Image (cartoon, rainbow, N blue to C red; front, side, top):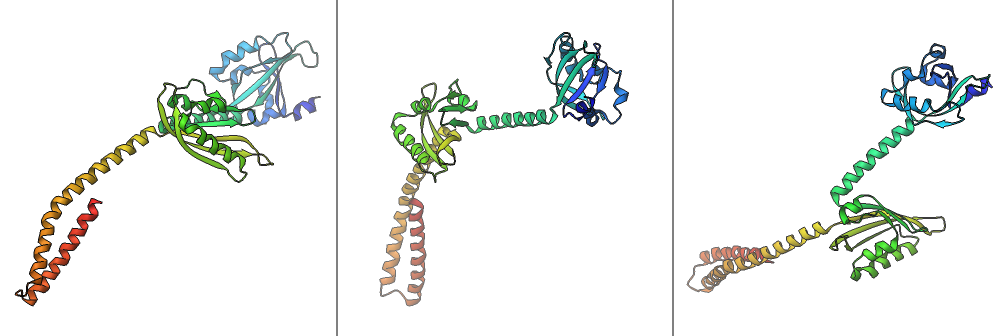
Length: 312
């Protein structure tokens, strides 16, 4: 039995009712070092992180007479002072003469906690980024018709619920855009060669206002080519469209001003061109002067053309 315990992948220890170590299996060597005998008789509480100790002691005190108690994860100091996350289960085997103590079976979940923490930070970072750029990410289970959004969907479009179905979302699309948008999605789902769909349309926000959005969808297909899931993004581009319209209006005003100014400039230039042509055609004008006038005429025509190009 002892050999089986020592070969176990879990960390197994036996402590007395005061929490002092009576036994540690070989798995503890990876955390506490090769000489486990020096920990026997020492309190297990001494190696627990101060922030986790009170909760651990509270759970430990409830073990008496019970076959199984699940503890909250806690941090245990290893042989070099690093903190390892443990997830223990305890059972009272004090009446078993072969054990005569409380058995703690723990799993080292340090890597899991680290990955979970990184994922949480990444989600928080992505959430902030999505909020900043006006974009919401969605995950659509096509078979179950379950549509789940990131929190930025509420932030930018005002809807409290971030979970629903495709029918609810379809009803939020502006009526003149509905048929086109759904036809684009259905066409993308039918064709096994289509992996993505991009669409731009208007969407009703929770407050009743319309938002111009662009929607990007990625289809995931099973072996038969049938879409079982879709993920994508919905971006509010209303402000971008407003800025674009302002730029277009300003460009139109600039063109009108340029056209008006070009007429004012070209009027005397046209008269000057006529005078130059008359001087060139005058038989009394000397040949050398005519050559110079032809050069001036060429430059004036280039100037006139440049003004035309600016006013287009």
